[in-house]
Every structure is written in structure tokens, then in C-alpha cells.
Image (cartoon, rainbow, N blue to C red; front, side, top):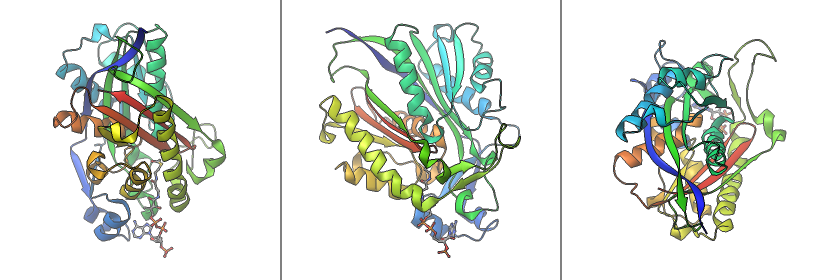
Length: 325
Ligand code: ACO
């Protein structure tokens, strides 16, 4: 049966130049390299300069994806930017990215699902492509979370970093089997009753301020592994794929212990798990495309590889996606 698939044409990334180490943080709050590495796996994170906004990071990641793969701006029909840290409340960061890329047609919008934002945005782009509304979509996860962090709160300031990753998706014919190239299945979920476990203390309508990140880390941790594993299992079982068939597991990069526990629950060996949290920290919506780009650039992810993506974030939102590269 002939079907339309959303094929990955290219991936790109951008990390700000400035690196902040755990030792740098230990001069700002009562923490240590040992504590941060043991509890999270994080060693360093990149921090945007005061002149860099989320749109700047997004444009650089997009140019990397487009340039390396010889994709023309004129071929893009849509831009979706998944972000929790837009340049401004409005207009959408995506419309700024559209203009900065020199794109004069199509449409652009932001999507807010915190750390699951990239998987939500890929799901939206896949639906637009499969419905025939767009042929080629640029999906970006871009964050300047350093602007939302309370740098005096050791519970949260050690966890986050800045960066951007981009993926270009385009319509391709498939046979409707899991041997097809492109997105094979996605599942997204949310449950707002968990909203008070992870949130910002401000917002335009709530307080006319931006606020800073609050997190009940222990409770978020407790919920994360179960939700991540269930979403992944559902995405696989719906299309009859076993975890043994996977080439790579690319989870949201929040905490090494969450990643390890989820992989274990799914029966995946650590050799198939992509881990970048040690040098990116948690970059929210940017973490999955950054991790993907790193492994594609190194040549470890190859054409034909079967990839499982998995994420969870504030809301709670969560989801999983299966794709053949
Ligand atoms: N340095 C030193 N000590 C610290 C630090 C720090 N940076 N932060 C907290 N502590 C202390 C606490 O104050 C506490 O001290 P106390 O026992 O005297 O009260 C002690 O360490 C233990 O704190 P816990 O919160 O129990 O530590 P835990 O082992 O749970 O680790 C962590 C905390 C790393 C935040 C963990 O709970 C976690 O990773 N949770 C999930 C977070 C996450 O993944 N969030 C993102 C998912 S969604 C998204 O990406 C937006």
C-alpha cells in the first residue's frame, strides 16, 4: 500500500560558545562537581551570550541542517520552532527565524510543550506532510533556558543549558511497512494535573513577568521513567517493532539516571543509547535534535537505522516517536 512518509532530509545543530563547568557553578551556589555528576551525569553546559536569543540559535542550527544537505530555502513550506524560551511573548520566534533564513512564503509558528516540544513539533510536521498540506518542513528545538534559571537555586541551576537542533522533513513515498524510510509512528500525551511539579513562577497573564524554574525533582524523577517507558512501548507495539530491532534509542537528555532506568525498562543495551547530557545538560526542546545531530555528524547513525525517540517535560507532556533514518 502506497503511503506518504515524512523522511528526514537533514539535521543540524548549534551550541553557544561559552561553556560553564560544574566547578564554575560551585562558585555560585553550594554544590560540587561530584554531586552534580553523581546525581545527573552532567559535566558541562553551554550558555548563550547576552547578545544571543533563541531565534539566533535556531537560525544557526537551521542553516547547518540546510547547508550541509544542500536544501534550498525556497523548498521549505513551514517552520515550527519548539521552545519554552521564545525571544518575546509575541510574535512567534518561528516567524523571526523564517525571515532571518530569507524565507518569503509558507508559514511559521511556535510550539510549547517544554521538554517534549521537539517530539510534539515533529508529530505536527508529520501530520501536515501526510495530509498533503506541506511537502517540506523545518522543525527546530531551540532554547535559552539560562534566561529562566534562578542562578541562586542549586536545586535547578545545575541542570539546564542552552542550544538548538534542527531537522528537515520532506514527503516521500513509502510502502506502509516498518521497512519504509521516515517517521513510522508517533504518540504524544499530556496530563495537566502534574502541572505543579515543574513550572515557571511567572508568565505574561499570571504575573506580567517571565519567572524562574521551579521543580519538585524527586517527584518528577519518580514519574518520568514509567511515562517514558510506556510511551515508547506503545509506539513500538502499535507497528509490531521489538526493542531488539532498534538501532538507537535517543531520549530527552535531562538526567543520566532517568535515561539508564528507561533503557533498562525497555530492555535496551546501553551501547544503543545516545547520551549527550554530560556535555549539553538539559536543553529542553533542543535536547533530542542536538543528540541526533551529534550522532549523525559522527557517522554513527547511518541511513536505514531504526531510531526510537522519547521525551517528557513540564505539564506533564510526554511522547515517543519511531523513525527510520
Ligand atoms: N548540589 C548539592 N546538593 C544539592 C543540590 C546541588 N546542586 N541540589 C539539591 N541538593 C541537595 C538537596 O537540598 C537535598 O538536601 P537535603 O537532603 O539536606 O534536603 C539533597 O541534595 C538531596 O536532594 P534530592 O532532591 O533528593 O536529590 P535527588 O537525588 O532527587 O536529585 C535531581 C535531584 C537531580 C534534581 C533529581 O531529582 C532529578 O534529576 N529529578 C528529575 C529532574 C528532571 O529530570 N527534570 C527534567 C525533566 S522534565 C524537563 O526536562 C523540564
